[in-house]
Length: 107
Length: 121
Image (cartoon, rainbow over all chains, first blue to last red; front, side, top):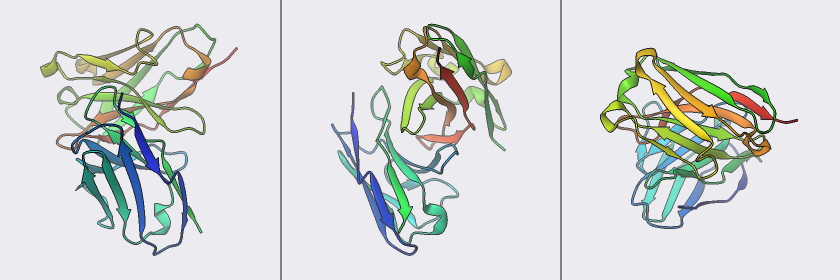
């Protein structure tokens, strides 16, 4: 199975900060990676697919990059509604797997 | 507007069975792969399994943790996805979500609100 390691698992940031979250895969997944945002008590929301394609309706302050085994999600200027937990998911091989999550909290 | 609504969750004894349903509306259900994803209390997301569409023979994939105990099926005439869960264990306790695999978005582009399954004696 492909393991995904997210870092950091927790980060504290202020409104307006630039935030970067990393997702490392245990083997080459090309660009078969998605990023999700999950607010407390809600279902996940797709932000990015194919590593760098912004899902329709998602603000442009979110961006994704990377290929192979290393990927990043960047929020260019953190907004109050962005405080949530973020997950990566690989869609290269079955079983599909998620990273452990990164919780973004208000400093 | 796309809607996914899960139902069927509840309290069940270890070793018991439960069948979850996901009712879909607002899109052409038969065209899409559909996933089940779960989240144990206070934990991260865990992919449970996938149902491919008719074009791909409704074939399925499962996580190792549920293979042989859980079965995913669908009824395109009812726009519904199902998860039959047998031999339930306490570690199956979670909120279960159904999610639509997008086209062309390769990811879960729409999710239901989830249904809670509690396995406890």
